[in-house]
Image (cartoon, rainbow, N blue to C red; front, side, top):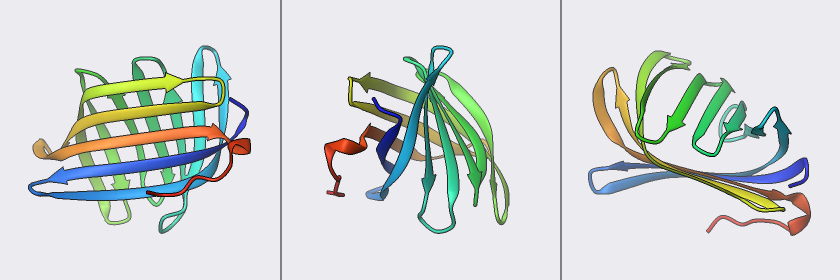
Length: 144
C-alpha cells in the first residue's frame, strides 16, 4: 500500500433487537515500522479525534486522542481493560475479542473485529469494528 490512503470505518453495537451503526470515510496514512503496520486517520464525526491503529497479524491496538482519549487492545480470546476518557468523565471498559481478521494485499488492507463490551464490569453489548484502507488512487468510496 502507498502512504496516502482512504480509510473506511464502520462501528456496530448490537443491543437487544437494535443495531447502532456509525460509519465514515476519511483520508489517512499507512506506515510500516519494526514489523508493525500503522494506520493513522482523524475522525471528523462531531469534534475531531486523532486515531492510530497499530496492526499485527493477531492483535490490533487503537489509540484515540481528542474528544475521547483511550487505548483499546483487541486480541482474540483475551479480555483487555482500558480507560475511556470522555468530556463527561472516565469510563472503565472491558473488551473481550471473539474474532479478529487482518487481510492485506498490495493496494488495500481490511481489519474486521468482533468483541463484547463491558462497562464497569457489566456486559453492555456485542460490537463490531471494521477498518478498511486502500490506496487513494483507486477512486472514491461511498457508504452503502
